[in-house]
Length: 389
Image 1 (cartoon, rainbow, N blue to C red):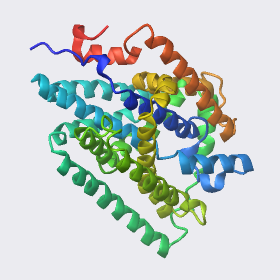
Image 2: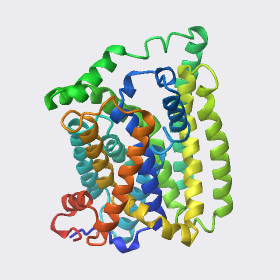
Image 3: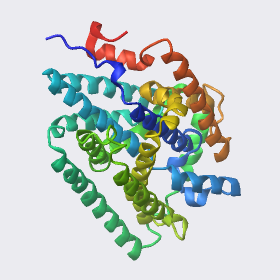
């Protein structure tokens, strides 16, 4: 049987727009790591200038941890769409999806080792293999399964951290700022050779990448599963019909999510509060963002105005990888060497400016071609000579 890719003329525009906005949020959050030794310091006490403190507070509350769940949700949504199309066409799903995910796994690994240790593609592809097993479960069972898989492990970790924070309030944060690693990061990324950067990044990835892929089973996989479940219910396609329910989710998501996310900024940011903020707060606020974008996307004027953002979301793999290429070129020694030399607000505006250029590039590119360059390579690897042109 000869397999062929899904035609592009049946794309859901609101899905692409949400994916585009999620890429902007992810880039703003990632920019903290691109230009600052963020992984090795306590951001709640590190920044000395008033501008940096305010910028970090805004990013931490409104952006950090609240846009990757949207991307994960849409990742699962898309996988289920392909599963249902395979059922309609009576074509094998698992072998083709495994091949597709294997290619994404390799792309993610190359991205992590050659560009940036904070890559998420490796983890998403790894977790996607598990979704091949779970995607066959009906939505009415998949939703509670995803909830239990997320809430119980993360809840146990939170209560353990809370207990430790109560009994030894300074234990978890006293060595949080690793000054040696901070100095090494600045020296190597701003002035080191490519080999030195590669070695430093490799050991960072062993902790961040592989560790993230393992922890993703309890944090990211449930969100991917929820996306697949809501895809079965056609929530995005039925947004106009479900406006009332979506509005409730939006209000609750913003109210509860923002309340949780602001907690570390109200007093002593103990590790249990930071964990609560990043896990439950980030995901709940992400639900609010998804609901808000879905409501906006029911308006034709909104869709028309933000269609270019959807173009960047349509070629999300290209957009995501080029963000790393541009950012590392700006901040690493083999580019302009500005690592550790810009403040947070400058880094944030760089992220916004780069994304605007990406939107313009996507608009121009997709006026000539049917898909982004990396998307074409991905499809070519999946379908061979039968890939769309």
